[in-house]
Amino acid sequence: MGGRGRPGSEWGLDTAFMESVTGFGLGVVITAPLLVGFGLSPARAVVTGMLGLVLVPWGSLGPGTLVAAELGQVDFTGLGVWSAVLSLPVLVINAALIIGLNQRRIGWGQAGFVVLLLLGEWLVLIAANYFFGPPLAGVLASGWVIAVTLWRLRRGGPLPSIWRLGRALLPYAILVGGLVFSNLAVALAGGSGKIATNPALWLNLTVLITVLLLRWPRRMLHEVWPVIWGRWQSVALVTLLYMLLGSLMSANGMAEQLASTAASLGGGFTLLVPLIGALGGYLTGSNTGAAAMFSTATVTAANQLGSSPLILLAGQNVAGSVAIIASPPRVAFAVSVTYPPGQTLPASGQRQLLGAVGLLVVVLAALLPWVAALATGVGG
Image 1 (tube, helix red, strand yellow):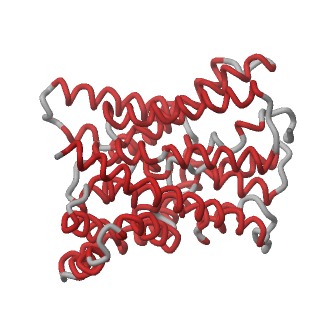
Image 2 (cartoon, helix red, strand yellow; image 1 turned 60 degrees about the horizontal axis):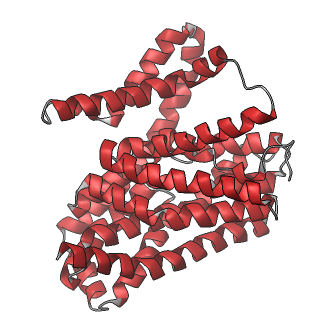
């Protein structure tokens, strides 16, 4: 076990919460330097942090899953639920790789804890998608991981004071609490006032309320605002361009043509869906970009084949999110906050990430036809 006594089974798993709330790979930006502080080498910290990105379909409160649902014209909640179901291999394989990379062997007690952690995370993820919708699912599922981990760590020494912990978690409490209560209120109101459940609204309200409650000095706001504006512009522009590309492909018939070509493969197309999604995620570095590029074609091909559009789109969504861990822009982002300027991730680290993506794509490709056939049979 490395890293100053921190349980090896927990390496990198805390990345999921920050990615669910912020998205765009910022979970690794926060986690990788912390892992270096716990004693990991920069290469292991980057690889471990990237492997911790297991809830990317719900990153930044799920815009990528929303785009896939809108372009594919499927139910947003249903897509979230099936994406959660298909995420079990991602949780299990990434956790196993994290343990193998950092600890090699674990005892029965630690193995039991890992099973409890992952099984609980998976079940909470499915239930949260179903009852609260995809925007909150990643936050609640990773919140389970944090709660169980804190329960385990309390036996190893005192935890931070309630005041310090509460102050640190204040923004997340506002965000999660606002979304939960707004969803409940809208449900009780019969669906009216749905704008109140918009994650973007609560993200902005959270920032405003946090700044007011924590009484940030005006000088800090002047320093932070240009950085926020610059980063928002780059992310918004790229996301917008990929969404326009997907809409253009749908409007000019290109998506239809791609779908017809894919449908000519027959049942073999189902096996290729994870590979197509992974290719989009790797090239764009964004599950939103991957969704914008391929969702319409995937759903059209699924309809032509008589397969379940929802299941195939969920497979594409999960695979596209998986491939982000090896995407050069995301890796470079993590390296920039972990290594000294000018250094890059060793080739061995990149091979480990690509190997993880390849393994997950193969597992999803093997699993997807069975799930799609089951769902189609049940639906029929």
